[in-house]
Image 1: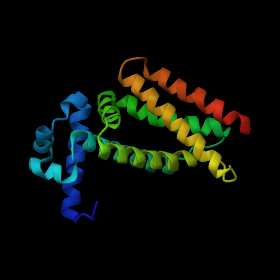
Image 2: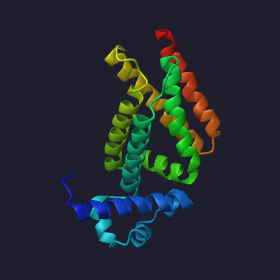
Image 3: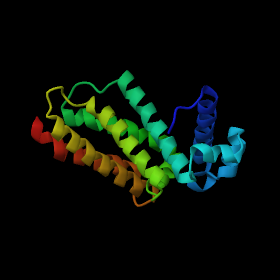
Image 4: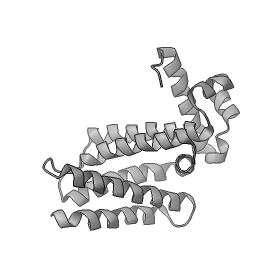
Length: 191
């Protein structure tokens, strides 16, 4: 995507904010592009200038959400304990933030699971932001290749747990517990 002017970026951010608002109120189905345009006070065509589909818009909203999480974790990084405990703290904070907005979480996770090619690109952006965030929980001398493999694997567990939660297969506590089990299985061997 080419660089946006200040006005274009402001409109794009209003569209993302509208998607957040509508998703938080009614979940995935509540995010209708006409309603997003009305809420953001932009023309419908403006939305499609920045986002190819609803799934693309919601996936970009998820990118913003993860970047915000990353800023919060950077401001208050995990401290003390074993590396598994620090990783679990970051993942629980992320899961707790999604639990606070269950309808929005459902909308974001549903969009990320779509086959929209733009949403797939967002998956990579989300993975990179989560990797950077989780890396703060690892000691500086941890093998970078192993760290990348562990973080990627935990990302898969987190995503599949969120899919199970938003589809009512189990509660959010079970999703968080699955992450904790995975983190211990992957990381306890390094203590």
